[in-house]
Length: 566
Image 1 (cartoon, rainbow, N blue to C red):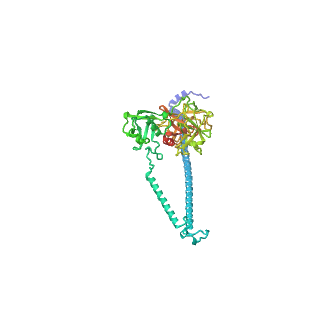
Image 2 (image 1 turned 90 degrees about the vertical axis):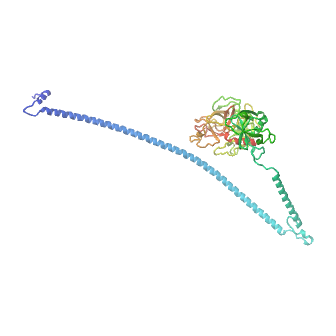
Image 3 (image 1 turned 180 degrees about the vertical axis):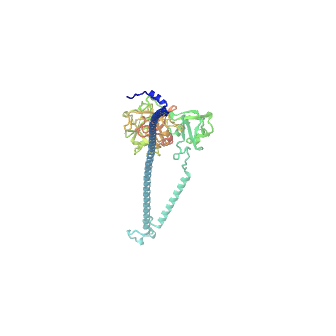
């Protein structure tokens, strides 16, 4: 049996130097160190492999992050491409709309040119036929004079005097022909003398604006109200502009004269005058010229004289008739039934008895509405009737007929530019708390962005609906023109004769049947007609508010129409 020694003894024996042999303890230490080195290298290899695995994981994370960043950049580029395509699509649609308008405009021009060419050709043919007929007539007349009529019975020359046989035309002899010629010459001479007398003796029509002598339309628009304070301005030929009227020398009859210049002649009992300080920065003043009144009562150039300054800086203010006041009180905000008397200037225009458009009463004889209401051959006054002072279409009062409908000559049915018409009633409407005119805007009055105004009418309550039975009212805001005409809204379709009112978020708006109705704004102590309902894209859509005809830009047309028909 082998005796096994403990490891400790063995180690001691190895420490002993036997027979001069080499030290075995050194080999033991080397082997121990070798084994420990293997373990260290294995441990370090494990650490390296661990670090390698962690490095792989880090690189995988970096790759994932890079891949996510690439995906984000790819999506961003695709989004930019989509937005670019969308912008290009909007541009293409805009160009397509403009192209359609241009093609339609060219087609209309081609048709008009074709009609003109056909008319010119017909006129040329008629003129040529007329000239050929005249030439044939002259030729026949000449032949009739030069040879005798072959069907006439033979004449016994022996029994007829010689002077009776010479002629066979309009005169039967030489003596008769001479007498006819002399009479023709006398007629020509007398006619020429009469023409000279008319030319030199009778006065000719010379256009001189506002001189009291009417020549075409030169006596229209000789005075204008100005600003919120109703100052008066009259035309002056020496400056070719309008001048403020000073308060000195002013009399009651002068108010009647200026109201006549403004076109208001039937409400003398309502005329009022006053005085107010001249606005700062105002220039060009006139005053009543007492020394020339009576020389020519209709000549405003003589009626007023130019002055450098008004006494005490006081100007005349005039109200030719009461307007812009109402008996009702606003109690409902936004698209609901209106109480009687809230909007006494609201008018219902019925085509052959059916409500079609709205209108605004601006004097007992006159209405303002939209031009597009009278398209498609519906401009005959006898087809229309006007209703005043009521709320429900099912309970309308007796109507008043129309005498005339004057559509602005610049109205464009394609763009709705100049969408305004002036209407005269067959008789004056009786005014009361429920029927009362609204004021026209004065020169210098503005309706700024954010101003609160009101619209009213019997229009449809939703885009596909029929007209409302009850009168509706809605408070709206005047909106920024540039934004309304921008790419997110009407994209360049508006003109300077238009304005926007409503809400950008939509939901409240005018609709079919409200066309021509009033956009009324309160100024100082009265209501003023800022616009007439004109058009829009559908009804109450976001970023598509109602578009209205801007009356301030078309006052000249309204005044001239009223004054020329008074």
